[in-house]
Image (cartoon, rainbow over all chains, first blue to last red; front, side, top):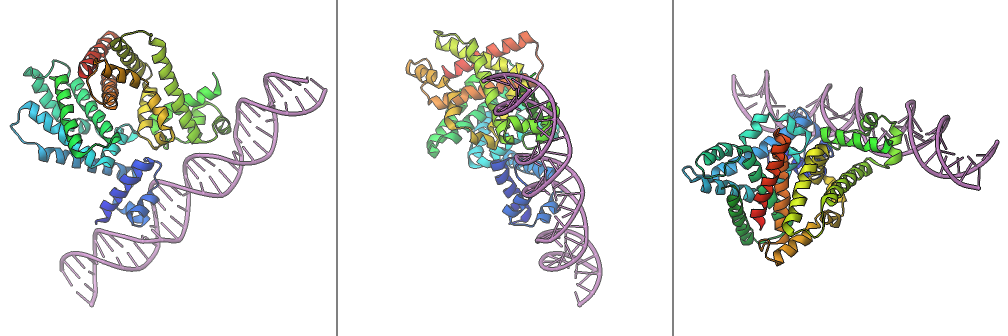
Length: 185
Length: 185
DNA sequence: ACCTTTGTAGACTGATCAGTCAGTTTATAA
DNA sequence: TTATAAACTGACTGATCAGTCTACAAAGGT
């Protein structure tokens, strides 16, 4: 495997376990099986590495969601797809999802341009449309967005803290979506 | 003011801004206006300081909630009180609330005995009772608890990201509770 | 008055860290 | 072949860190 990928993989594992500053670059290099200097060959600073990891994970999540989405769906179906695929990804890539949460309450989040964060929420557009069409409740789009996001985190947390079979997990995710939909529609 | 309190206050401010490991004890001491050694007089290690800060904040939040709660309320009123008072506190003590979120996705959370974390959720008992009495939906108590918690975080995030007048904020919190109640009852 | 405990200070230390550097190996292409 | 660049190495460094130590001051008890 690519050494650059190994570095990201090792960084993810150690950051999740020991935190950003609690993980020395020397340990990352060792875990990745590369020399100290190699890490700095690919990432000028530790900061760069952290940001690159964030971008990498976010890109992968976005690609997963996009790959499963089909155009011309009704708003509800589109939302459901987004919801379910995000949660499935969160369970398949638990470390990655956990990292995102760590990152979001860390000082590093300030290094990401605010627009970039909102772009993740291209669902925003759909929310605006849904409100206009009276499919969604007449509440501020930002507010609905917060509700949706936190709902997803809540389900993820519950799934991660229990050990459900795949089928039960799947059912819970679907039921959770209906609960969410009742809440916002 | 007590130097010990000054140290906690300074630690909170700097941890929120720079993260746990991103904040040296020397800077905490300087911000608190005490000597380096004084900090270690009150807290044997930096770890102890972090844990003490967590305990302090959690105690203050719990006391706030308890002080506003009255016995013999119906389940809905009790829940509403918990919900509203938590959110009011989160807006009055933003740094403290943010710190709790940082702490919860940090490696330090592992140092808190699991039972201690659940005790925060003494609401659990009420949830169990509510399910039995068919006031709440027949779902796992842990699941409902996750939904309630994440809902609170979602509202907090929205409130923190906008600048509503006190009265509008108050109304939004109350409306949000009704949305939550419809979701779980 | 004397002693003990507690609080406070800040210079100091050994360890650790992010990042550098001088040089070696590997890959690519002329 | 040879030339050139890119990948890679690990010893090294200056800075910084958590925590220690010695000293002194204040408080309180007898």
